[in-house]
Image (cartoon, rainbow, N blue to C red; front, side):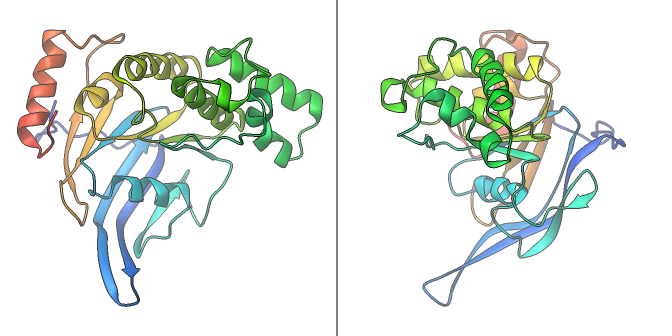
Length: 264
């Protein structure tokens, strides 16, 4: 439901991520300024699944990169567990839209890479990596290389690799945007299953309204032009598992469509 007066998200002591007054300006070609974000406030609770929904060029990926510590805000601050975010860290796992796998490494080698860089021993990292390979449904593909995998399987490897580092927050930047419709739906189902199994705080970026309604506890929409500004919030009280054809699902999808500049 859209958050109306008297229907606000309750502020709790369990806030995991807090963004205060986030703005971002990029300098291009020496002097040209591009205003990507304008004074965005956002809070995300422990284990909450929040979807940031907006069309292309609305600043949503920039906001996610700022939360990840890959970009520095021009104004404002991001806090994780009350501490300022000053750069990337293992407490945030990031999954990109593009398949960012090492092509010369196997599934196992890709998943255990972060653990290896953190100094984990071979036995420990192999056990942890195997757990998440099993969790994402890739048992039996441990020795496969990325070129032998489908698009959906590659993203499963990326998700397993991010989880294997034991982050406090998972950040997913349109991870299924390159997949065909059927594979995308299967990956959405898998994302919910994994989240319910390994409860974590999740911030998921998408431009797809149906995907947002299917996944989210709460949807935050951005305006459909730069600079990105927060437009609306919707609490999604639909029980899981959700179906695209349920009347309540269709009603919420229709409402968000009517209130945004997005097109299905």
